[in-house]
Image (cartoon, rainbow over all chains, first blue to last red):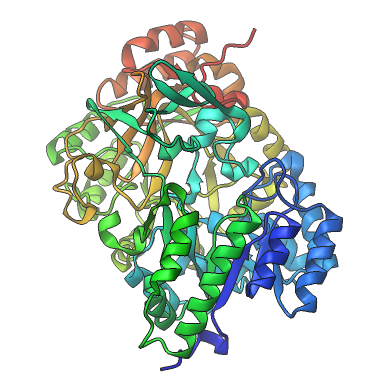
Length: 341
Length: 298
């Protein structure tokens, strides 16, 4: 059967663009939308060497629009009194450059955008931590948001429940790095390094990372705090705070989460029937090669499921391609699958 | 300056919880936040029980509020939330925007914007004030300086509460890390967190205490302690929050009261408080530094 999509739209494939080459790659491989950010703390992937200055953003928007695709601007960190105008200036620029939507987390910014640029489409960022239809409808009633990105905490049944009780389009994460914490509700990085996803757009930032070969093995530290230690045969991963090995009651293990990627390909027919409007691919910090690989597979899978959800089957070749680029070369269904919790 | 007891973040046996609040009635706390904010599976006290405790504390002269769950997932979570909003005997601490929507819709003007709402600027706080908030609790990760700038930008002052004592609530997840530790799934967790008076300590591989696992919540291992910073804190906060801990909570409240009344100086209060902490203190967030640090101005 063909899927009757919510609001008469097809399911959009929303892909990450950490740079202009990544943006072009995503568009060339079939993304319906790309999302990106400016080179500053106004977005949640504020990493050195990533993101767009106004000139490259203009070029990227032009590239996408000429091909009939959309560009979404992530402004999903929380401004404070002393830097408020950086965020409002970014919204003004987005409106002026003709971006298709801005992805916001802060209610104050939404109020600003709705008042100043009434035609600018607003999406609620995953950083807004809205996990129920009551919360999503709050942003809809107050600021007219048209889409919400769900935090990676709900089971499939709960996602379905949300979709049935809100006029807002629902976007979910389909693939990529997995935050085990509720986005927008995690100050672990701030606790260890002083830089937070909420206010600085950074988690476990590179400038606080130390790799050190010791007699006990390769040690990875974040602001001096030992996150993990690897034997010679082990592949030493980046010390993302929640994906280290720690000691709890004398047992050393991944106490919070393993280094693994979210991969929901096999849930695609269920997500489609539930009425999901868009699937988001994580990874603005990843290379254009990653973006190409992941976009290609997800484009093929989405086309297949929209044409015939009942006979959808995950192709082994798709999984093989995706596993190559997964963190820790492994994947999980995350919270969609209850036993993960 | 008022002292508030934050919601109990741990899962204690029913009688232990009731005994704890019976003692709170006689304590120096002015305000008490009640209810389960961490995990909906915890049920030693149900909402009716919490309402009973609330009545007892109100009769003892405390300002009592019911705190809502920080992470709302199911329809049953929303049902509890609606009941909290519908009762009119006590104020409410809103810990997600769904609670804000319901409180505003009900026309309530007696609620507190909780620490998980991510209020970082005056525009957002003013929106909440217009929606009926009469106090707000600053997110612990925000600094004193940023608080000052926020307050200066408010068109109308709003009572500010600052988290001043306890293991820092740092993160919430759908996953239960206590169940994970025991190789159990959340849905069949056997309530292993019950009776852990202050969660489970997580250490780095070199033995340094780092975090605390408290079910779906992750806390700091260190105890956030602003006793030594009271002169600066009291310029910006009207309420100080003390987070209940396994033992000595009343003594902590008394120490804050003594320091605020000038019966003991901040350095003396900080030194005296060492006996009430199971781990080292930290205050980095207030100083705009990594939260784990214990910062002493040069």
